[in-house]
Amino acid sequence: MKVALGMPGRPLPPPAPAGVGNLHAAEPFPVAARRELADTQLRTNLAHATSTIRAKRAAVVAEVPDWEQLRDAASAIKTAAMADLPALLVQLDEQVTAHGGTVHWARDAAEANRIVTDLVRATGSREVVKVKSMATQEIGLNEALEAAGIEATETDLAELIVQLAGDTPSHILVPAIHRSRAQIREIFLTHMAGVDPDLTDEPRVLAMAARSYLRERFLRAEVAVSGANFAIAETGTLGVVESEGNGRMCLTLPRTLITVMGIEKVLPRTQDLEVFLQLLPRSSTGERMNPYTSLWTGVTPGDGPQDVHLVLLDNGRTAALADEVGRAALHCIRCSACLNVCPVYERVGGHAYGSVYPGPIGAILTPLLTGVAAHGDPNASLPFASTLCGACYDVCPVKIDIPSILVDLRRRQVDADRGGVPGGLEVAMRVLGVVMGSARLFGLAERVAGLGRLVARGGSIRRLPWPGSLWTESRDLPAPPAQTFRSWWARRRGAGS
Image (cartoon, rainbow, N blue to C red):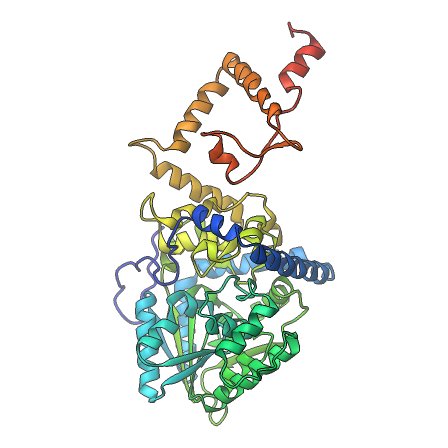
């Protein structure tokens, strides 16, 4: 299937390039994960935060008797929207324009950054306030604005913490999940101008300090940059859901509002929000509804921003849409429920993934957006960052079959590596195939493996010489049973059975 979205009223452009920006890991996942595993404070913070969110989500989901039907409806709406995406985007463009807004189409991160930077420059302002936006993190907008001499201030509390610390987000919904309250206090004392030196690490006190710091910026900002959780094609309405009210301030106070949105966020009808506004808060923060749901349609004379722009971002999404298996990843509504149940994410955190999209959804979405250049591409290791336990699929509110997509991406990588000098994994698989294809060799292997009981401690083997060390460096090996199935069977039925 070939998909070319094009720009309304213009000849179709060449196929969109692969995604660029903060999507490329600098090192393979196993290398980064090994480093993160050594951070015991990180693992403690992650275990506490994810277990708390999991419990809250489970409680509020159990209150909804038709939860599975809602998931089915969301999956169907997203599937239909992706099938009709070019037409829906044109309809959205027309409706936003009809209501006084201006729509821009960005093929990749560089083009989106250039559009936003030029829009801010045209206002004469040298600073912007931002409401949390994964799309602007993906394209590295803050860095692009800084290079242009424009100061960008994140107003989401967790995003502000990350920005002040010079850090990168570690979670889609809770970007500072890897930071403790004591660490946040130190960040505020070190980087937040005018903060009370007697600041404590009490959550209410920290929130009040951030509120005081941000309020001045809200009141003087002429330009705001936002993301969007949803866009409604039939009306041109954009929507943001949040918990702190900072988004409402960004969306209403400045004169100019620039929204950067991935093209996959579009929904056909206003009625579709009924489904997603039930699923999203319960799946993300474990709340029955979001405290703040902001919807706006173009420009309302005399009320709110009078100069409204929408930047529709491709950045690899067209390529992902053309992937018959992987396109379901574009259904994601960024709730992060899959992160909170993933045993891999809970131990290594988001930085190990190297992309702005961590966790199970990031392990499929990132390589689909960027493509995988070659075996040495660090993004090629992301689909292997999973135990395939299936917990991510069980909690996904739009029923993305992440495990199946992970397996398919792994298959492609293995197929791409065939030929040439075989790697260690390929050699091991070939040897295993020969052994398992011969009853005599398999029986011999069982007897050799039984010697592992001599070095096992507490039911597991924790250290083996090479090449077994390649396994035991990162995980324990279960001790071989005292009796194999074949020996049990022979004893039960007799050697001649």
